[in-house]
Amino acid sequence: MSSKHWTDRSAQDFLYRIGSDFVSQIEKAMEKNGVNQAELAKKVGVSEGRISQLLNNPGNFTLRSVVQVARALGNKVSIIAYDDGDPGNRNGPVNALIFELCWERAGRPTDFFAAEERPQSAYNAEWQDLGGEIHGVAGTTLRAVPGDDPDNYVVVYDGGT
Amino acid sequence: MPASYSVVRVAGTRPSERRAIALLVCDEDPELDAKEVLDSLGGKAEREVRTRFDHWIEGGHNDRWFHGWPNDRRYKECFVFKWKEKRINHRLYGFLCNPRPTTNPRLRLCVLVSHATKSEWETDPSELNGAEGLRTKAPVKAAVASAFPDKKKELLH
Image (cartoon, rainbow over the protein chains, first blue to last red):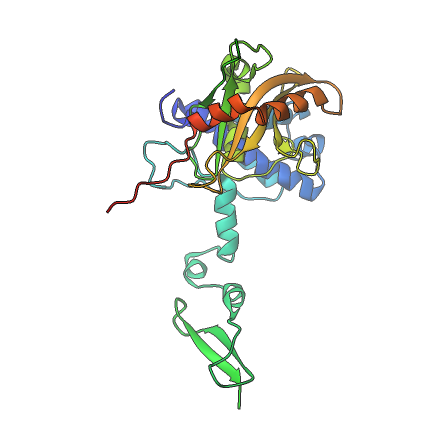
């Protein structure tokens, strides 16, 4: 095998790998919702055997079945084409869970306006107690707070005499 | 004549500074069958195992796919990859190590050594004893070091 990732061998290999990422997400959603395969089959409107086939062989998924299974669990699906700087596919696909993690950390934006605004939770998470004190001024604490420009912070001190 | 070991990387996996998977090979020891078994896989089973390799290499967690025994003092460096084919539970056992402590202290290498099928809940201790024994064996350590040299970059003057 060359130095390329195994998913570069064929579209079927690539499909299997990303289908497997999808199955991992579905199994997580099933566990979260307390849904077993029989119940999922009923929600989707197919036989339990068909659900088992899909979950056990991710290469069997079609776009339609991806949507049906995700929606049956109250989830949505997006299709993303991305450039990870690896056109030769040496590294394989980026795991779908990574995209989900990034979306969560960005505050789960659902439109471009929200995507461009930094969510308050991100500000709060990035407030830092810098510890220490201004030299020679007892009782001060240093904090980094967000300024008008979301990419810059203002260092302020509290207290002191 | 002493057995001669070699370590080969699993081809087609993602290059990573953090994790890698390799196979221990020894012509004189038929118990070391991990490479033979992996090479014999095809179709869905091969894709399934490779997908699980990928997930471990990229830092994922899934106890149904792979795990170690971090809380067992005897086997805390042992590792296993799991899959099922035609209702048979398959296992690839191996050990974890870092062959590059100087140049890459964060690297975790999984060296797979043997294959087994599993029908009982408990893991067969002979597989883990085998993997652990090989991990500490000098010729095996040398083979790992040869495949994953720990070279410092030369300083340019």
